[in-house]
Structures are given as structure tokens and as C-alpha cells.
Length: 451
Image (cartoon, rainbow, N blue to C red; front, top):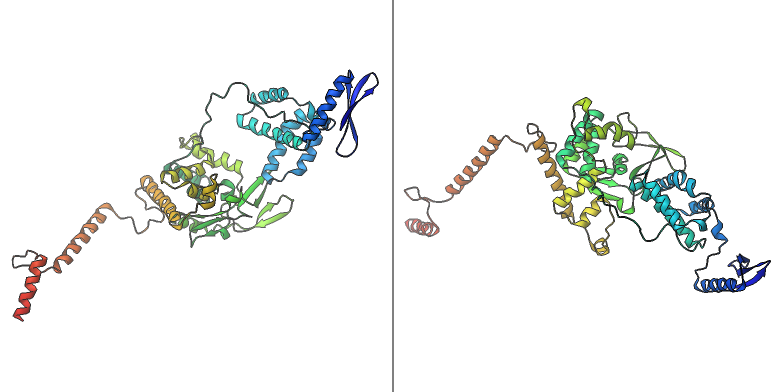
């Protein structure tokens, strides 16, 4: 309920708040203006849209302190939010009252960010501000979110570049260069990521208890399926999403490569959990040349970029400029598209949510389809290796590769042996010509009469 009353030389509006106390808005020049505002408040209270103006005076910094405590996100997401708050949002908006933030002020600030930062970075920053203000609206601190609204101005004329993916021959070339720089373990790590579609954290956090070489399956564990690196500390935890926990069938050549690396079971690697507790992790499959956890920035700077973009000191030209480690995941998906694998099977293998509810609920991946994926990946590897190293049998191809001449002769010999055995089973006439079915019947009848 709201009403107007005289307050000194002006008028004010008094209203009853949810907690039973009285609030007020001062400074109305006459009774009519105060009455109009009191009617608005009464209507908003009936509709449930009224926001106490006094709450809008809360500084953004104070609201953020409360907002932090409501978050239920992963450690990596929380770390990203804190970085944006510390470097961008609080320096600009921290001392500003929530109700004092206007749409024009937000747009001007967004444009200023665009002059310094990449579009993706600007999007991350402004989305977090919008999220914070949207929660303030839900809390009743302000009536509308000034960080949302219709887009104004020119649309981007530059098309966003598509992620770079690689053909199998490019992946092999990059992996072989990384083997020169970091050893065979890193070589197998790159091939594992490319031929399974695993994410960086899923690959670098892989442990031998989750690798079944008999079945040919890698398991991304729901609780310990990914390596996380936050503010310089590493810890093993859940993968990115619930769908990311999965089993991935691997091709035979990768089984052979992993078998050779089985002796490389790094034990006692230390992790620091989010609560600060340290823990030793055993059986890590892929580690840095120094035997520790792979750090994304170190791997990219020292090994990945020289192998992909080229290194003049080593006489290396570029293989696939712009390709990232995550691009191996894009490559794996593209290969499956080439093989005609259906969407739901690709999503399950990559650990993605299936947006189509019908496919998500009722779409299942048969064992036959899984075998088809594995078979195609194996063929792709064999074909790629033979093109790159025709003089050396591919991993997993031992006993199958034969010289061309020998293989042709053997095939012809088999055909001749088969023809000879067939000929031996067929009676012949005196001239050596094979008898037909009717002639063979008459011959058998004549032999019977003679007997």
C-alpha cells in the first residue's frame, strides 16, 4: 500500500515494504505528482513487479559479494568469473549503485572494450555483467536489466572464422614432430586425442586404471575423468559435463601404441584440490618430458605451435597453421562425418549433449555402429601411414603387409589351386573336356550297367 503526504515544502510517497517497515520517496513538487507515483506503486505491488527504490542504491560491489555465495559452478568457471570481476567489472562498476546503471552507459563501456579486446573476450565480460544484473532483478533490487536490450548499430561484417581441423596426414606429421621435441609419450598423446576426440583435460588426466587394452576401451570417469589447471595448480576432477563421462572404443593401432607406453606409468604426481588439500595420483598415462603434469600453455608454446606452424631453426615449414589441440577434436568429428556416422553416435563419442530431445532419449548407439567407427578409424590410420611411410609397415599391420609382386602371385596361385581342385572333382571325356550334368548322369548309368 502506498500514499502521499506533505514533507516540509515538498511531498513524498510512503509505502509499506514486505518486511512490514515503511519506505519513502521524497522530492515531489505537489500532491498530484505524489499521488500519481503512489498509484503506480500500488499497481506494481498488486502485480508483483514492485522493487523497493532503496534497494537500488546498493553498490555493485556489495551485491557481488552476495551474488558470489549463490554460485553453483565448477572451479574453472568460478576462476574465470573472478578474473573478469577483478580485471574488468569491479574497476568500472564496483562503486556504482545498481539503479544508477543505464543502458547507454553499458553500451558505451562495451564499445570501449571492443577497441582493446577480441570480440570473444568482450562477449564473456558483458555476459557476466548481464548475469549479475539479471540476478539483481530476480532479487527485487532493480526493475530491469540495463545490460540487455535490442542490439543497435552495425552488425559485424567479418565472418567468424571456422575452427581449423586437420586431415589424418597432417595429424601424423604434427605428432611426429612433437615426438622429436618431447618423446614418444607425447606422440601417442596427440594420436590418442585425434583418434578418440578427447578433450585436452580428458587426455592429459587419463590414468591406466581407465584404459582397458583387452576390450580396446578408454573410460572418461565421471568423478576423475579430467585434469583441471586453475591459478597454477592442477587437480583431477569431473569432466566438463555429465555427458562427457563415457566409454570410447579405440582402434587396434592405438591399442598397440598404448601397450608400448604401458611401462610409462607415472606415479606420485601431486595434485592440489580446490580445498587446498594435496594428493598423490598414480598411473598417469601422459606426462611432460620432466615427468610432471602437462601444462596447457607450456605444451602449446614449446611443442605444439612449433610443430603446427613451423620452426625455422629446425627447418620445419608449416603443417596446418592455426590448428589447436582442441582442433584435433574438430578433426575427429569431421572424419566421422566423412564416414557417414549419424549425429547421435558422434555426440555420444565426443561426450556432447544431443540437442534433439527425441534423439537424446530414444537414439541409441549399437555395438555394430561402434565397431564401424573403430574400423573406419583403423583404416584411416593404415592408409595415412602407408602414404607417409610406404617402406615401413604400419602399427597393427604386422603380418598383413606383403610386397606387391608376392601378394599378386599368391593370389593367382590360390585361384589356380582352386581351379585345379574343381577340375579334379569333374569327370572328363576322353578328349579331356569336362562333362556337363546330363552327360555325367549317363556315364554313371553306363558304369552301373557294366558292373
